[in-house]
Amino acid sequence: MNCDRCGRPIPEGNKACPFCASGGEQAGDGLAGLVALAREGNQNALAALYEKTYNEVFYTIKSMIKDEDTVLDILQDTYVKAFTYLDRFQGDSKFSPWVRQIGANTARDYLKKKKVQFTRDYTG
Image 1 (cartoon, one colour):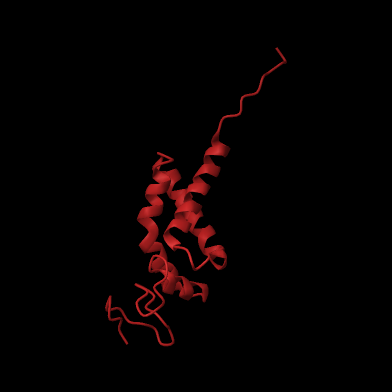
Image 2: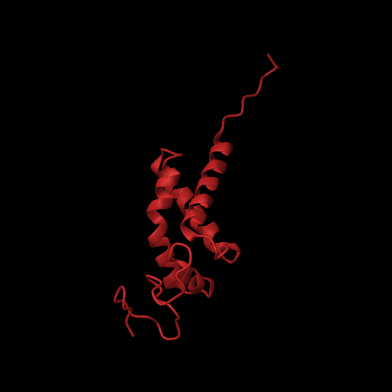
């Protein structure tokens, strides 16, 4: 069976399309169906969540950190955290702001660790 919205095949037994969440509850930002599938371990749903929120999260982090390689590292850490703690996500809120906040917090943590610590050398 193919999805009416995006035309991609819907795996048998799925309640919603893992790519566009069509057919599932459309709470929050429309990603609720994907979140539900991802919680069940559906790898396609995880990939779709990543694809649908990547740009927002990338630019949130990029606004705080200018080094592209560091941004990509933090972006990876963000999604590892988000997908690891997906069971803590409250379905009544929107997924996109939740994952963006994780990205912003991860970037802040990086900046705190990067801050130069000044110490005095009293040996002189």
